[in-house]
Length: 498
Ligand code: LEU
Image (cartoon, rainbow, N blue to C red; front, side, top):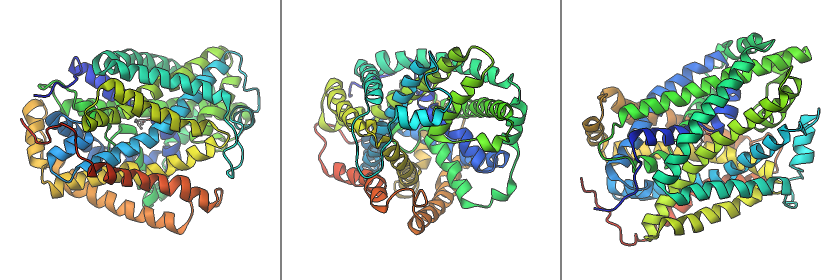
């Protein structure tokens, strides 16, 4: 029997899993994705993806980790020989995400500091691009930007410190404090936003359904992409976390709690963001559609503008918002990096301390490229490609491997049922073996075709740049997976023992 680290309780595990799921994706990605893809109408593909792919896959990953008790590559090897490379591929994806996700948290830390004096002034976009990030052109890296570099180092000290402390004393202890704190802070912001002038108009815009988009494949890709990224499924995280569950812990119920907590928070963020946008539009006397932005600009340009226009307590709400982003990001980053802390320890038979030093250290070093003047462009491209050709795609391979090749859905269902209150029915197996592979498979194929026909960014980025930092990065993760699986395990028992 291997001496495996464990969470202290099931509640500790749920905090960690929810902490992973709730992240930057919920606050800055979801509201804009929903709005861009049909507003109220987006909830149909979103709910479909959540119920037929998101929660079923979460249950599947919890069951795999809990049963096979290993990192993603070790667990998938134990499911059936030949699965290992998918686990390493997923870890490769996590590595890429960690390198830039950490940088966004660093920005949030800087902006927490800026909030005290509202340093961003009235032209918040110019402040972000020119003064803070000092964005250059794509031709060269330019130099390091100290304003990003310093908080980035701080982010890594915190995250690696927590990982160093271990599963129970580090991950569990930290998320148990950070997640409740995040929920409280965020609720304060949302309540304030909902009571601002113009809030109702913002919400109307958000929920107004545009059904004309519903038949468009892109909307469905967006829904699946959002669910996978937001629930942290398909890239090794949930398998790793559930491998630390105490033996007799409920799986299915935990997956429902995690899934609904994540979507609940996402919806809350949608309310908060659109109420605030409605307020901003009313202040400026323009339509909500003219102020809505996604991603980087939403959090770091539009929100500072909203904060400027608040009738009072601007600094307080600035700090609350950026601390929320920081907390949400940190608990997710911890889970991303833990995937390869587990993998490295097992594959090379080294201690956690060594894995954190070398694996974590390497990520921290690579993340520095995003602290250069070219950081914003690199981040945009890397994020797009790893999401389009990594996240959901690795999830698809995982499902096909388990359901079709290893034929392990029934045994995994019995495993989940043996420890859970809720019994899984045929819907679970049908979702995973038929619906998800068909819908997701078609979408991936069509998405690949569209990306080959037209370049991402519609000409904003030179082809060579997209090739180097987009395609190579996404395919590199897959190649890394294959390469790692060729290496022998050092002193680990690859067989499954119940
Ligand atoms: N689920 C996280 C989020 O929504 C991201 C993931 C990469 C850990 O931000």
